[in-house]
Structure formats: C-alpha cells, structure tokens
Image 1 (tube, rainbow, N blue to C red):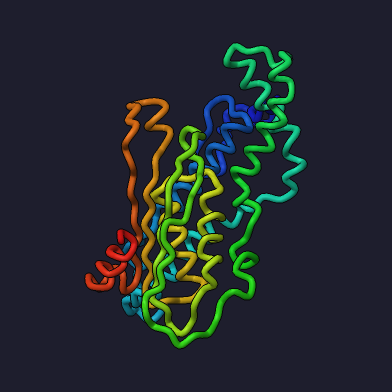
Image 2 (cartoon, rainbow, N blue to C red):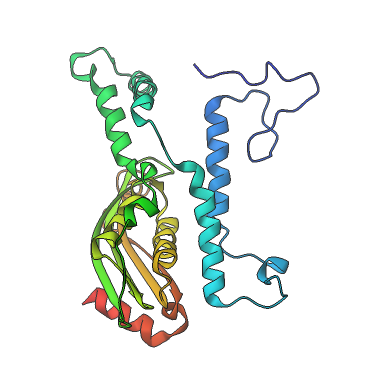
Length: 273
C-alpha cells in the first residue's frame, strides 16, 4: 500500500519531490521513485557543460582527455546511488506488485497457471536487472595489464540483452567495442562484462552506448575508444508502430576515435568485416 505523503505537510506548505520540484496534491512512493529516476536520467544526458565549468582551475581550456574524465565522473556519480543490495529482501514486494498487475489486466492470480507467476516474474526481473548489483571496480579486478601495445583492440558482436526503461520490454542486439591502448590493455572477457553490467539495467540505448565507452576510458585511459550498438527494440516491434525489421544503431567515439577520421574509419571497417 502506497503511503500518502501529504498528511504530514502543514497547511499552505507544498511538499517537494527529490528533484526539487513541487509535488501534486497527493504523492505516493511510486511518484517519488519516478521523480528520482527522471532526475538521474537528466543527469546522465548532461554530457556537455557550458560557461565556467569548461575551464580548469587555472582558467585554461581543458584537454580532450580531461573532458572525457570529467564526463565519466559525472556519469559515474549519478549512478552511484543505483547500486542494489539485499535483492532477496525485495522479492516479496516485487511479487506482490506482479500479482496486482495480473489482476489489473483482468486475470485471476489464484488460477492454477498463475499462482506462482508473481514469484517467478519477480526473480526474473531481478535477473534482468542484475547489473545494479555489480560494481565496475569489482568486475575489472586484476584484469588490467601493462603492455607496450599501441594498435587497435576490437571486441565485436557481443550479445546484449536489456530492458527499455520506457516500456519495460526488451531490446536485444550486439555491441562492438574498440580502443587504442596507452601502455595498458583490458582483459578481453572484461569488455564483455562491462557490456553486461550496463545492459542488465533499465536503459535507453543511447545512454548505454556512452556508459560503456566511458567505463573503458576510466579503466585504462586509452588514446581513444569507440562503441557501436545495433539493437532491435520490442517496444517498436510488439506495440506502437510495429515495425518488425527496424534496427537502431548508436555510436560513441572518444579521443582519437572522434578526432582522427582514419582511426574511426578503421574501427568501423573492422566491426563490419
């Protein structure tokens, strides 16, 4: 049962949501959670700052590497609070929510075939979003190696499964990641693990693409990073416009991949080959 947060507010006072905006007359826990998520999404999309934020403490224009690190910190900080603990304790409440959904669509949750569905669905949702339970530093562990290698490294066609945060239906595709080492390389399996961490969350493809690129940048500070994702979105296939053959392609190029057309073209040719 959602709590009514307006009962404890004195007359004339307007309660506020976590993003600082005034709430409507009645605000329940779901509204507050939605407001928090919206606020985080706005932070995630703010990858470019203006005015004084573009200057260093000495009043100088920052280098591309400094800008990338600043962008990464902003993105990482905004997601720090999304780490999930004690998932098992969340299952009963999640199962109760699924039971309410089953009843809401007109079905009988006590019917034989549906009795255990809320519990199964709750466990499945926790698995679909298990990326909230992992931290980048724990996953990378000791898989960063000093290596005098400065040629492009590409891991392509990494299978990806994620949930659209707008409709909670899947989008499925493949991810290709390339980088130019700067005296350090990343264990190949860890590239796939980075994809897994960020894709196993409620996502939009555009943000997912940039998060993977920035995570590689933070891990090994390469000369450049490129990430391309190609995916099919069930929210476009099963509902709405219902375009069965449509695909969405997003890319994020940082460092030399953005600045040097030859480097970018080499990467794109390798992942298409």
